[in-house]
Length: 295
Length: 295
Image: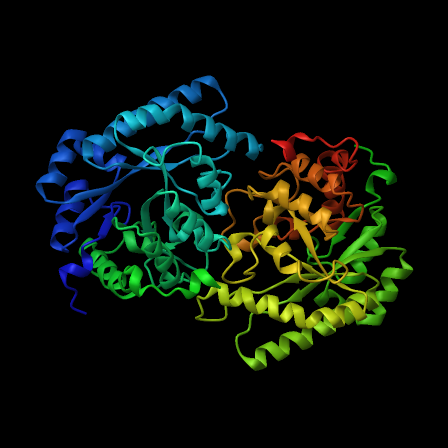
């Protein structure tokens, strides 16, 4: 398939997809593949240095679609809470310096030995509220990422888009928003109505696509797959996103041992083809299939 | 810990927990352990023969707390749908013959190659509606089991208690009810309100307890753990169940390779101790901690 540049004008490589590439390699690879944007992880940025990373991406003519990640807000002790606030303030400054207004937030799981989900969820809301003024001051949105419920205990007590929007609802949309990551939310019976709600509230800050592979990988974190390799209906979810009017970048973020072992240029070529076939056709709201949201 | 019989008067062994026991072995083991009830799987019943199984359990003085399982209603083709209806009618008759009114329903995943979750969910609702008259006629409730979202594609497109209650809502509570299985629903931010709703609607037909172990087992189906070994707050969820007035049996159903490899009597002894410590204290609605449902 020959893919023209217009088709790829919103496609962004999240650096996790090519985990073995350094940030300069990911930037150069994205340029070679004709991609206009990258989603950066903080560890890749730190290896190069913040200002050098920002310059490198800018000089290559790429947008930064998001910075991954802030969050981990569930500490129950004062020292842990202080450390979380400090780390998130640093992440907000990094996002602003890199030229993105989207800081992806993975909110964290239960503290060791703790089983009180309701308590941990309340602490997320509390810490987030404390960070809102700092985020607004720096022009960065904290973008809440609901994670698949299989990660609720060890990674993110935020499990649904509805729950994320409930937490966001007390705050301005330019300070707290949400990301829709197909892997994490495709199963949710309330997805059509919650994506529509996120759109109405102006809180769709990012759309991330990857597939849900079966069987679940022996390391459950690595079950994310290339679009088309798993069970997700990208037409349905992309149509819902399109209907909100979201016109930002679309990141591909894949944790997958087999993909990490591949040549990076091959990964980007596959990613561009699958995106062109499975996602791009449904991005035009006028062409969107209304059926998935209606039934 | 010495456990008196009164403490165990609602504890039921689901035969999956002692997978390597035949039905007669499970019955005898339950009697030895002082349990008053068993939850039966259809394959264990079939090995003995339906009438012989019913007699064996009755003669031992045990209740049958539920029959596992009906369901698998998502077929898209006419032949598959016909087969599903036939199999569920057979299961309804088996439940009635065994003396339980609770047929647990695992509704099924996506048909091979199909990614249309909304369509599969609609077919579940359609097949269920077709089965309602037959279930009522035989005095058996179809007990919908929402499964953890990690199984949505390959096992059950029913993912939350709220979704189960939405499907049930068009039908009488003596024909369509729900089971609350801690493993499958503990993560749900809407759990307190949906359990309360199930209670108000008279649809809590079964309470099943087991833990959610981390890390997730390499075969994700086998991550169910003995209460206390994982991350679930049994006090919180049991208190919600108690507040509904549910006074039926409480089944322990564990899929876990390490537990299956243990001596069955040891498994039942551990199960009784953990139940006495982690579940039983919160079964009295008067003593129930109101906090989890309120906050």
